[in-house]
Length: 127
Image (tube, rainbow, N blue to C red; front, side, top):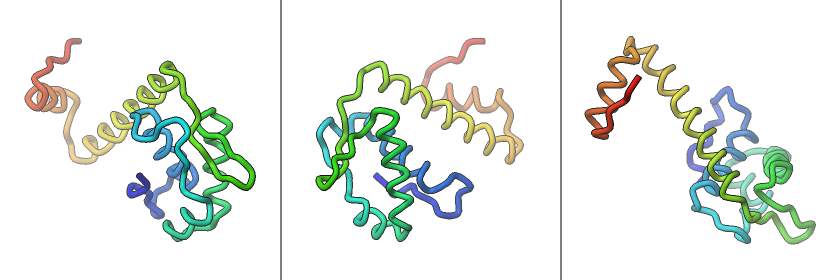
């Protein structure tokens, strides 16, 4: 789940960790009641400061994705279907933003992307 964490990214590590968990919860990869890795365990695995993991878990708790139980760990909370849909929409917009940035660097325009999307998916994009 945390394989996409990139220490060289301009996005802070705690935000990357939180985003990974949000995606996993929104997609159903993580179910309500499942335990997240311990703070120390995840920090050791990612070779980062435990305070970074704590910040990610606190942000997730504030957003209603997890519950932090003192002395027990951090657990996925039951997330409403609406929150799951909203999170998937946020992730979809982020994917599109990154695609457009990458395409612009390569000199690929929206029309080219639209045609490629149609070829790959068979879904026509209407304006």
